[in-house]
Amino acid sequence: MSFRIEDKFEIKYDSKFKLMNWLIANNFKTLFPKRKINSIYFDNDNFQSYNDSLEGCVPRKKIRVRSYSNNQNIYLEKKITAVEGRYKESKKILDSKKILDHYFLDDIYGVCKPRIEVSYIRNYFCIGKIRITYDENIVYRSYYGKKTKNFIHSLKPIIEFKYDIHKKENKILNELPFVKIRFSKYSEGIDSLKKHGYL
Image (cartoon, rainbow, N blue to C red; front, side):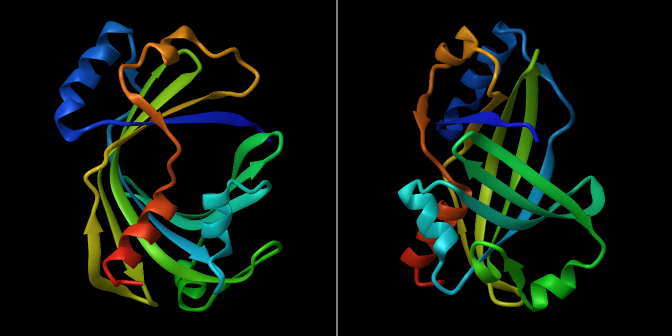
């Protein structure tokens, strides 16, 4: 199990050029080609995972089925926040339809069903042990056993710094010219879809 830190920053669409210049100036390299990520998030009928995220409860987790545009594999993932830090459990599954059409039984949240689908384009950069992801074109959709036409297109690209919890924070992280925020795509998606009456 590897704990890590994830710091998130919000930027505007018209600041992407500024970000790219900053990455070049600080010797970041492209880790691998950008790709589309698609995640379907699960929660119980009380939306406990969502509420735990809002309240910052520990321990808490997010449960999702995830796929990538350049990979035929599908993964069942649990993103867990514990007292010691964050870590992710990922398991390749052969048949996602069985879970998506029924439910997932979790040891904390009990019976969890698919609630929303989140898709976006992710760009990857790194320097040493520090990895940066830049997520854009984020789309949230309600999920009721199948995809619906109800969706929200986010105007909020997100940068994430990911680094080992045992490493000292590199000064580069303090020099990023953007605002650090607390952010969850799942929570943001729930809020946006509820606001527009899609959940």
